[in-house]
Length: 373
Image (cartoon, rainbow, N blue to C red; front, top):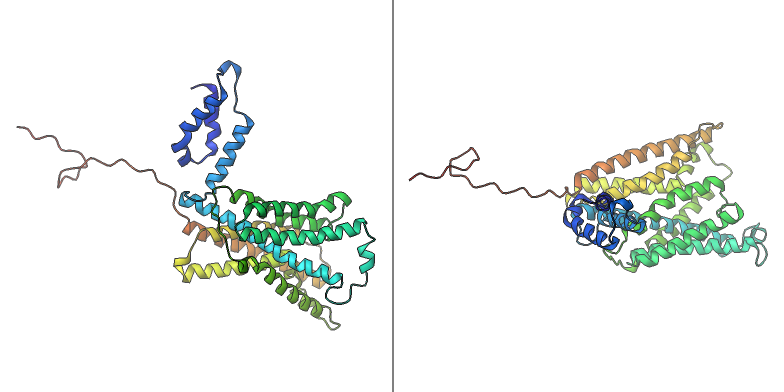
């Protein structure tokens, strides 16, 4: 074996063993043919483009699509669900933020008191930031709808553009688009990163093209509208003159972005456990695995929000709720991992050679000697 061939075989170890057993020799021959006549004295190495192509193929095989092994297909479906659920959550929250922006501009009544000051003059940075903000919300909604409608390429482009618009003003002015400071940037980044990575990883060229009806694509818009109404009702109630601060300190941690993500994950986990117990025919490894993956960034946002220097009772109560949310998410993730392990298809087992037949009544497992004449 030449030095270059050994290095190609080492690079191919990125691929699953079952795939290498079928295609390794063919791929090594193709790589060596493309490399030309090289000797060990030249210290040849695989090109970076070849290693990148093998790594991309490894991701595509392990996150299988149509025709893949059941275990790889389950992983692929889980990652695709991560992208769909993550973008749907961002689309729902974008509906809430868009409605708040429209309310600020007076679409639902009189504009806010500091409307003219915050809007800025025509062509100002404030006005451009406001336009980018509205466009960002619309792009997240469009990305989720495109993905549900079976257009992953459009969803990837739209989501990437929305992400760029989200952080463009941050890089340019040093301020956060939603005026929430560095903490808001970190929270948004953590919640965005997993769905944005799952989108290109799961929806590759071999992924199934599932086209859902329009009413499914409109669910985040309906959920966002309902959530906006609920948050406004709760916000108005919490601002009453006779408000019970101790009571509302138990409620407020659930009304933020990370709190709503925690609430959605816990509700989905409870529903999934019920389905696993009482509807065995509907068990699937992909959904619990997807929810367990999504629980990781939500737990990180709660870890980042932990505070141990609260001085007033309301803040201490909110800190306790935050810790409780973190513990509930951890227990939920562990439960989901157990459900995934129980329903995940087994690994492909190599067929064993068929033993030679034995004579009736022979329990030694060895062939009998030939009869003598």
